[in-house]
Image (cartoon, rainbow, N blue to C red; front, top):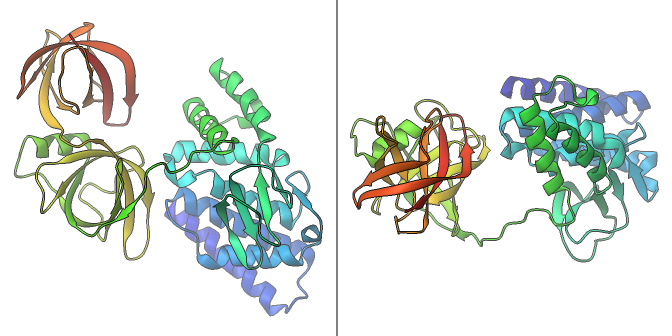
Length: 378
């Protein structure tokens, strides 16, 4: 993905240099290609977990301001032109591609391209919270509520909801629509759900306040490594990092070197230990942004005091991670290897607190190397 992104940037830079050399006399078709190449930079930067170069949005704004579409009050995605390419770039930005696993992000790009005729930029504000651009002064999309500023264009994708819901109905029947042939069904399903959430009248917003913080932490990732540090195996690899901010439910930190075993992907399991604190905390990667010289990671904390335990269905015990305090009648979450399956509905949990009988519920999250199962304590 990084190589694809670099190629897209090189192509866009070449178009930009040629347009500047033409000193305003570049043909309209050439300027359209430049706008299209800039939209591709936005797409592939998001898919490769990187921020696009800052001047990409500026180039799109300059092209859009000089285009005939900018003199109207509505830019639709159904008509070819620089306005549609600017709209396409904003649509990629709004989708949160950098928060999806790669297969889902690529499927979301295919969906956005199909939904583009149902998306528009409008001078009229219609939703309480949406992406806004004000070229050329504020070319990068921002989520903004309240009164629109002078010259603002509002991204509106509510009309695309009907198309996406139709795709969802087909996918739930196990059918991949012909317009999306070649995309894996599970990734398409996840992408449709993500776009419906982000383009709804009530999109996801940050609910927890962030607090600045600078502290040193040790980090390791992957199920086996996280289990190993909880088992206090001294030989496990870990990396020293620095936190940037935190909230009640998450942590934002940066890394200057690639960790042993490579970078964790979106959905990866991460264990964090504050150097001046006690114990380990467990989280799941929700944001990953590659940069120079630092790479940012945002994790959702799922356990503040996880502990290693054994889970047994009568065949052989499986080493696992217990996320919650074990209380009779309450629910507990257990992190297990992704290939772990139980033949019995009732299993036995052995932890430092004792031996307990659990009943498995139909609630679980499955990732590459782990799954999170929910049990009721009997």
